[in-house]
Image (tube, rainbow, N blue to C red; front, side, top):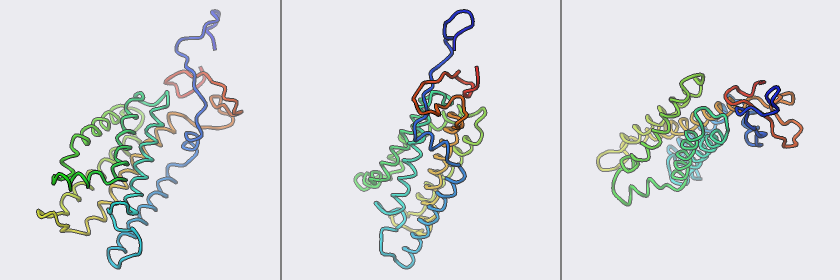
Length: 250
């Protein structure tokens, strides 16, 4: 599109590429469906963990065990949330710009890698210092990115903002439970607390991912054959869009 009578494209116009297959899949999936499926998975992991605790099960079902089912499931949730945050940050029209979401994605990606490899437990064994103290700098960095995300979502993104708050609350409560379940001799004094702790961690990670999914759907908008901003013929042609106007007609 050009300015009338000048033949020059206005400077506020930007080129918007066709969404990638991953982004289009994120657009198509229903947030409630994802939430129900993941909650079902969390419940199943917790049930297997309780059964393993009570009667013993053949398999790696102990809650919180390195390399166990709960650790792998938790790793997947963190990795998915981090991936969605990066996808959001890669969008030209992400709220607040790209840096906030890339930082959130990097933080969750680090947490996923740590959960997979059990780095924090290894560091605690090696140093003799509670890993929650060792990881305070990491928590501060992640908290700064989280606060920045809440700030940029203060107008018009109430659902995503509430999901981020709920996710942080779940993770915080889980860490409190982990701290109090051990006695001064570093013995597990309250084994039952492992169940709500692990469930809250996984739920918190799910809530973060849902927040990013909601924002990604908002940033890209609906994909439909009659959407004027969608390259429905698949030829890869770039379309023009005005920033900050949700892809509406100029």
